[in-house]
Length: 140
Image (cartoon, rainbow, N blue to C red; front, side, top):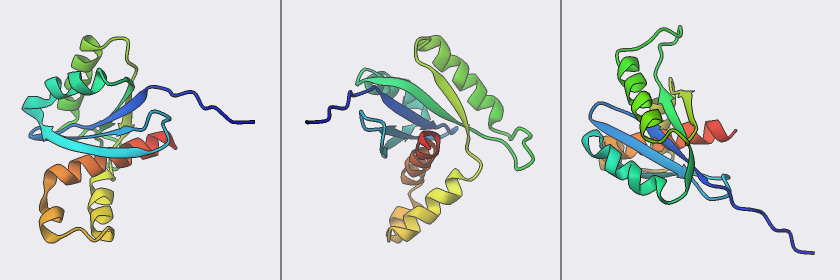
């Protein structure tokens, strides 16, 4: 007897930054997190419109804190961005996820994958890999 698995909507991860923002999303079955092309933060909302129209049902947002849990310099900006997301798409659940080690893990993942020196220095790529790591951690 064949097994049928119902598709769910995708989960989108956002590694928000002042200059550039990394993005990643799941497959429709929510099994695999894949990095998407990062974008300049000034271009983020039109990009999110396009992605959300493609079946995004939940959003994961990296939440920056220090090792001791205190806010960082970017925490306030991420909170303001989270508020804008909730206002723009109130029906889409937003999950704030600890992002403390995601950038370091992204750099290590690029190194282990044999990335070229130019790829390792590409902050847009690192931001998207970081978003994929956030998302994979969220998925469990």
